[in-house]
Length: 204
Image (cartoon, rainbow, N blue to C red; front, side):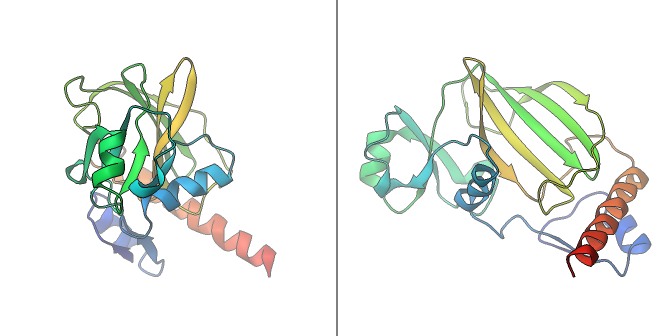
């Protein structure tokens, strides 16, 4: 059964076909800083993310201030100057704003299936989630489990050919992002949970 704080279009099928498998899928389990640290520990280049009180020596011009750090909603973040954030948002989580090529590059993983989604940033609201999708490309399947989540995404921005991760969503909602059939998603979830069981048996 799914233990989640949001709904997705394949939920009913999962609960019917995999009733004995617990799928913990929550947006609010980790703060953005802890999520990015998970990526950094795996060697991924990530944007700096600290409390406002700790950004005084940053060399960037602007920062993204997260009013609520345990959510991926755009309603809880704003773009402000670094000095203003340092003065007025000392207890809020801040992430350096990286000037980029005007696009975001999302890596989406659903079980073994991998996708690259390129979107155009809204020039008037550069940190808004209201972006125009330019392309969706399915990559080669992978049987490697990199992180402890069957459905996740990583958002990158690019500057001078260099990619930096700005968001790691361990519980990515698929509705409105990609058009996979429910049975395809369930098949990938079955693979993931079977693989996890095998790995745990090997570790015993």
